[in-house]
Length: 394
Image 1: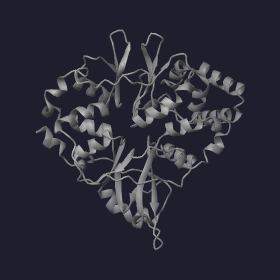
Image 2: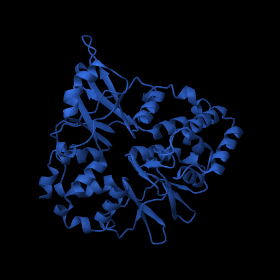
Image 3: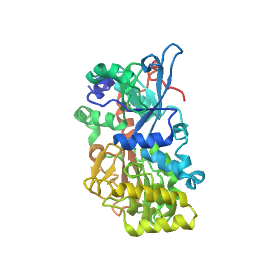
Image 4: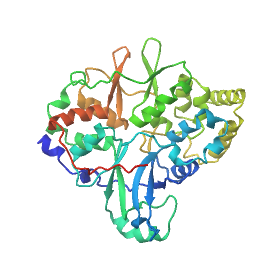
């Protein structure tokens, strides 16, 4: 029964998913930032459409998704040494400068492809699968969208709308039928050998800027950066999912604060005034006046926002709002069962759970990719498959 379940079509996972908003690869970083804020999106897809000489309509173009962007991509970009002193110039760079150079992170997949095929691609490193969807909205709005082209509005490519399929979507779909995989869900994560001990970690008092390579990598791998003390005890985390709920001025905090102070800076409930002042003072010391101007400009703009929006923090990369401390890490223990860990991750909308001992000593991390390996093993050895999931080259 479990094997037949994994043979289900991925179209079953697409039911009710919204169509992707898109951005052309010719757009600038500022365009991407504007789109993310304008639509309240956590992610936006980037497409290259090669139009024929006979037509300029998107339905007649050879279109492919070449990547996806979020606010953390922009934050890390602004934190680059060459961009810190001229953030306004950096924002005019092409969005292609933000896209990871690793091939296969985004892949197209047909609706009739199997869940097993989707899992295989994920285990090969694909982070998001692009699947075409047919909806009432796409059918009735196609003419309207094509007649009113906009940099951000069109969700149509090759005459079709598309949606993301993420690791969370696959795990949630499996969890809804978890009983058919018995007794595997009740086995401990230690016994299943899915605890990854090769974690990204930074000490509490280290400069937050030293975590930048880890932040970029954790964004790509959909994990997080552990913040530990000298005794290897987990204190918290610097999560790209949390940073994605901030604004671009957090790049100034990353540049000037320690890892511990950065966790306090991004926690919910408003920015601590003492840390804001500390960031401004250190920007002046570093002669980063342009970054300070950007920070004050965004601060002034934010203060004019409605009171309803203030004090809320978006996290989890899916538009979830929470009043909890955003830097608090979700943890389990080596003796936790697989299903318990899945419940924790799905409840908190994260793709990983930290593994600690009773004294909070960091053991490792369990990721959705690691969990998928367990369910994939049920179907036996991988078989050759047709090139249904193609990569649109950048």
